[in-house]
Amino acid sequence: MEENFTTNSLDELINKIKVIINNKSNVFYNNKRRFVIKSSKLKKLGEIFENFGLDMLDLFLNDEIRRTKESNEKQAYKIIREEILPLLKNNKIINQQKDIGRYLIKSLDNIL
Image (tube, rainbow, N blue to C red; front, side, top):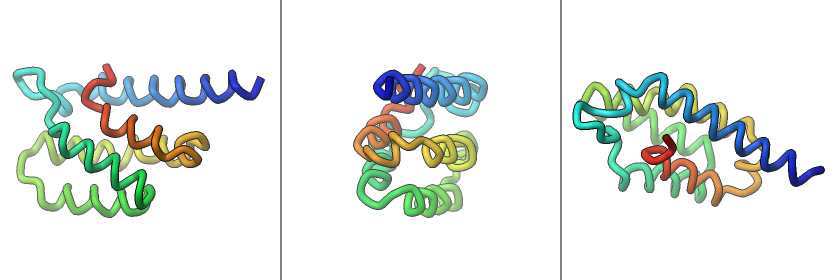
């Protein structure tokens, strides 16, 4: 029974993230249908989460929002910070197994 809860909880989290990205695809994808945040940057976000936690990732995202000049990329960071981070924060599995959270964050560009 516990195993089903765990699977459903991750499935639900991934589905919520898919909905956010899909509903705001005009922000997350450029005209060439490429994700506006480079995969190397997503990898770095995931590593920050895994090694230092959500609070440090929040600070890093805030800095990226301030420093990023490209409008869609800046908006994508804001959406991650304001809509996706709270989902991660409220998921017990992600908080207990940070490697899963890292993988999820670095895979945002392939989640759809």
